[in-house]
Image: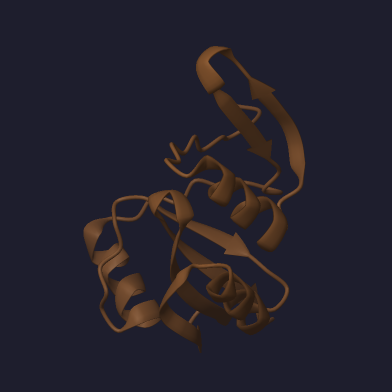
Length: 128
């Protein structure tokens, strides 16, 4: 295994690219176009991991991060330097704040947002 890519279908492609690239700050690695206005942009998300949680763990995370709002089967988490600032910037860019920043038992500051392209995202800042 050399790389993990999440491929997201975005009905509002330009809005999604601007949100994740320009507001969240994910550098553009490449962009390609094809016939019939087909477009894809590959953004660098830094180091990637695949976190697999059983239903009980997913429910516990939802309770800690959001007081019980149930996340979809796929939720994307981004480590940021400052969760409070990043949450405000993403909300100003059109994301809906599901839960504002809060400290978790595992010593991170997490927030949850509904973001473009139908993704639910967690922002987290490691506190240790």
